[in-house]
Structure formats: C-alpha cells, structure tokens
Image (cartoon, rainbow, N blue to C red; front, side, top):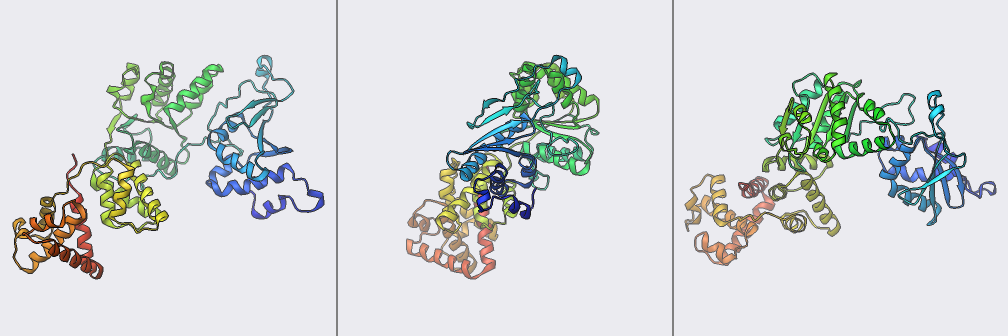
Amino acid sequence: MPSNKQSKETLPTRSAASAVPSAAGVWQNCLLLIQPAIEERAFQTWFVPIKAVRLQGAELTLQVPTAFFYEWLEDHYLELLTKTIRKVLGREGRLEYEVPVVKPTRQQQGSAVHMAASQTKKPSASGNTVANTGGFKNPFNPNPYAIPGLKRIQIDPQLNAGYTFEACVEGEFNRTARSAGLAIAQKPGGTAFNPMIVFGPTGCGKTHLAQAIGNQVRVAHPSKTVLYVSAERFINQFSEHSRNGNVSDFVQFYQLIDVLIVDDIHFFVPAQKTQKVFFSIFNHLYQSGKQIILTSDTPPKDLEGVEERLLSRFRSGLTAEMNAPDFETRRNILLRMMKRDGLQIPAEVVAFIAQNVQSNIRDLEGALISLLAQSTLNKKDIDLDLARMVMKNFVKMPALEFTLEHIQKTVAGFLELPYERISTRTRQRDTVRARQISMYLAKQFTENSLKAIGTHFGGYDHSTVLHAIQAVENMYDTDPEFRNQIGELKIRVQSMPEG
C-alpha cells in the first residue's frame, strides 16, 4: 500500500501543467476513499494490484490481473466502486476493466483459440465494461482463490478472522462439536473426527465453528492449506469449469487442500454431477490424510437425493449435532458480544433479550444492534421499556406469561422466605421488603392493574402499591447492593422454562 507521502505525490496538483487529471491521479483519489471503507487485508489483496491505464472524459480504465479478479470486484465491491468513481469523476463517471494478455504455453499454442487483437468489451453487472486484450483460452482461473500481488501464489482461505474459538461461547448446544473442533485444529486429519459433519438449524453457529477450526489450524499449522467454500459456490465453480472443459483443473485444485471446509452440503441434493466430482475429491483428500469438515441443516441420514456411496463416507467420521442455545448460553453470547464491542447494558435487559430471542445466534446479534440503534437515534437510555419496544418490532416474541404467582415464587426463593408469607399483611421487616419488591416486579413484568397487584399481595389498595414501587426505586438509586439484588431478581423472573 502506498504511504501517505507517496499518495500526496501522485495526486494531481493545481498547476496549469496538470489541469487535466491523469488516470493514475484519479485512481489515487479513488483509493484514498476506498481504503478507509474496507479492511486493510482486503485493500491490499483486491485494490493495490490494480493499475490505472487510461482516462477518457469520465471513463477510467483499470487493468486487473485476471478475469476472476474482475468478477470478484464486481461481486463484492460493486457498490463501493460505483459510489467512489462517481464521487471522483461526477455522476457520469464509469469504469472499464482490462485484463492483460496471458502468453500461451507451447501446448496451448496449437489448440488455443485467441481473441481478435481489438479489445472485446463485455457489459458487467454494474454497467461497467471489461476488456480482454487477447490470449485467453479460458477466462476462469484454475486457482480461484489465489491471492494476487504475491511472488509465490497462495490460496486465500476465505475465512472470517472474527470466527474464532474464543468468540464461540460453549454450552450444552455445541459442546460435543466444539470439543471435537478443538481436537481437529490441533491435529487436522489425524483424529477419528474425519470427516466431521456438523448439523443443526440455521443460525446455531455451524459456520462460526467450522471457520474457527480453520482459523485455529492456520495458527497451529501455518504450512497447512485451509479453504472454506459454500456448497453453492462449489456447485457454481464446477458448472463453469464443466462448460469450459476444465473439470480436471477444478479437481486438481481442490486436491491440493489440507483442510477443506464445505458449508451447507444439503445444497448438493439436486446436483448429481457435482456429487460425483465431490466424491472424487473427498476420496483423494481422505486417503491422503487430509481433514474434511462439512456443515448441513440436516443429519446425513436425511439428505435424500445424495448418493449412498457419498453418504457412507459422511457417516464414517463424526456427526455432531448443534441445537439452538439455551437461555444461559444466549445470555453469555450477548455478554461476549458486548465485551467485544465495549458495550454496557443493564443485566435485566440482557436477560430480556436472551429470553425472547430463542431462534438463533444471528438474531441475538441483530436484536442487540437494533437496541443500540434505537437508543442512539432517539437519545434514550437502554432499559426494559426500550427493549420491549425493540423486541416487538424485531422478532415475534413468545407468549410468556409472567404471572403474579411466578413473581411471588421467584422473590420468595431468592430471599429464602415461605411463599405464602409475602401475600399476608404481616409487618415483619423482611416480609414487607419482599412484598414491596414483588409489587415492583409485578408492575415491571405483568399487565396487571395496581389494584389487582395490591389485591394479590395482601389485599392492599393502589396507593400502597405505588408507595411500594417508589420505595424500591429509591433504594435502587441509592444502594448498590440492593440494585444488584433487583438486577438478579429481574433475570430470574425472565428465566422461565422454555417451551
């Protein structure tokens, strides 16, 4: 990446000699806008190797290393490139791409069909164009994951650096799969967990765990080649290689991998030809002692439409189920997210989110983001009222009935008092405090009127309930220990058995 000093030297000056901007100068201005918007590694990989070769009016021509490189830019950075070029060159700004000539080998010279010497432009998804200057037998790169700009070609593992074991909270829902994953990461291909198939509902953390294994392998075994690919993308790549008559290149590339992670293999069900080539790749890797990790929404026995010989390979290793996390794990996941992002949220709000978002981990993070957005945009403190408002719009909340009996039982258990005593009219100090807390929580968590609350807890009128609520709020504001007790009670009230 060019330094700031170098960047300034390449920017067009205001002198008369440079009144007309150069292609390099325009692209440098674009890079200054692109770099802060993406991760540094992505910037180095996908933008630094690009060369600006021509500027004609509001059309900038860029040279990219390969056709695959161009396709990656269009698939992943289309919006960013479009906004940037229009910001630098105006609303009429356009991009054109050129792919350099690849000199054919002697074997290719006899059979390669070369394009005409004149540039052939192809419309892209963005309305930009790509120019091929000749010399391509097949525009698809045999190594679709090569990292360009390096003297020695390396395979980009396609892993999310944030998916680690540290960020993968352990619970009953994933303990077996997570433990096996740790063992695999230490000795890929050398355990009984090969292949490893993780199955479970959408959003339970299968992809996170699979990629965590890959990331840990790269730390423990830097020489190992790791690759993550979705089944859908694998199918598309195979189809393109089939059309171009390069299936052997496709197979040979995947046979180079030491740790292959294929996500969502249930998409293989209708793809019979893909199953056959994957069987070949699977067998080669397995027999070579390479590690295979697969994820699916269903267990192998339910993958109807997958060849039996492939299913038998799947069943030869470890099949580990992951379910939706329980309440305590969901709460720990939220706490881990908060720690990661440096957030402070009241414990009772965290418990409220964990109780009501029972579907999957992605929804937990989405709920947290939505809550923060509402708090920031509306300048409101994060409390239970705000959390209730967000949850109603964010997710269909389960019909939880926080009854007066449930609250009374929770408070009695927490304060170690007999259940019946709280609803009597005794004036014993510990009972009065328990009754006031119960009234306060009843107002927080139920739709009962003040009169109904007073009637349940000893036959008191609404003014007594108001006095109890005020007394608890005063103690909450002035006594840290009492505040902690109330916070724990709120969590316990919300920790109802899940249906």
